[in-house]
Amino acid sequence: MSDPAPARPDRVLVVTVGGSHAPIVKAVRRHQPAFVWFVCSQDNPAAGPRGVGSHTQITADGNVCHSALGGPPDLPNIPTQTDLPSDRFAVLEVPADDAPEAVARITTLLERLRHDDGVPDVRIDYTGGTKTMSAALFHAAVLVGGIELYLVTGPRQDLVRVRDGHESSQHIDGHALASSWRVREAERAWARFAYGEAERLIDGLDRKSPASQRLLTLSRGLAAWDAFDHARAFDLLEPYARDLGGPLVGALGQMRDPSAATSDKGARRIQALRIHDLYLASARRAAVGRHDTEVLLLYRTLEWIAQWTLRFDHAIDTGDAPADEHLADLVGLGHDGKRKLGLHNAWTAIGRLDGPLAEVGRATDKTRLEFTQRRNHSIFAHGFTPIGATEAGRARAWFEAEVLPAFQRVAFNGRAPFPQLPTAAPR
Image 1 (cartoon, rainbow, N blue to C red):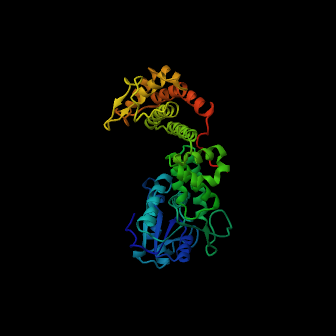
Image 2 (cartoon, one colour):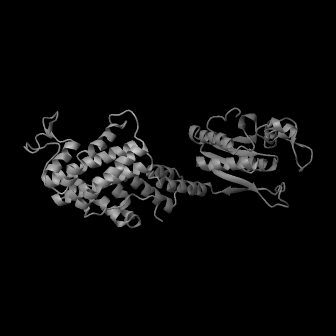
Image 3 (cartoon, rainbow, N blue to C red):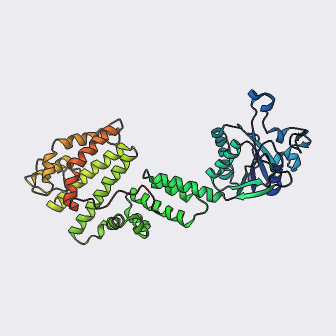
């Protein structure tokens, strides 16, 4: 890359240069840029004399351009033909047929112009150069976004080139292309529950269609839900209840404000829905390989179920347990002077009491210790190594076999109250 452009030109043209000078000259004259970046092919020594790059059309002295195809060079370089002084252009050399490297170099340039230099009007013309160079400039411009795309074209007598003097500059709707690409990537992000990523992709569009605006709002709402911000999620998703499915948004409406419950029955229902939501969140983490988080969420789900049944079925607060002789050996004194029931002892207490989940408390007396040990070994808890897929799978299999069915039977008559968050955007 040669010397950089002067600070903050108001319009920069980035144009690929190949064997024909005419479309490049046409593009420079048409756009009247304050600065031009010529993207040229670099030399290929292995090809001998035929491996000289197109940069000679920009920087070589004397006559280097051809007015007639196959004829001798009889015109000066392109900057001379377009009256560009040396401080108004620079050359970026790229390999003629190495698409990944060409895209990387051009993307770096365009991002610098758009974001670092803050050029308000960046345009590209991808007419010249090899097919690889043109495709690389086009792809990089769509990737960076906010760049106007142009192509010099015209009538042809053959498949080789447009006749000199018959060229015209054609604008390409880069915003529509960027929108199409970003929407597709956002939809792919939904497939792995990456709603925040989808939101950022769509929000980065300079122009948003009604469909992309809808996808943005849905992504934003589901990202809030995935972060347990139920109130914000409901505000965003409630208008799309029919698209997402009634049970999903209906449950969200109940969870958005736990303090709004007017009875113990209502509070019990809301808390059970939130426990189910936590369980589904653990499954989403499992789907993307975040197994430490998955196990921590399962652990909290197991703990919350114990807190839920002790509160609503036995009027016991695990953070302030009563002085009950049946529980005396299970209770520990906290720093605040209150009697506490930890996860394992809370389930032991449930097993001793005559309640709807007593059998789970008794049946899992030993196996839940193994479950809690898996959680304790997590790098997110007390361990030093991450939990792998196999170990997390064992923890999930135990929870789904030993605890979940009984909870769903007691809380929801045996059926899940709402499904997993969607992996495909509604049409």
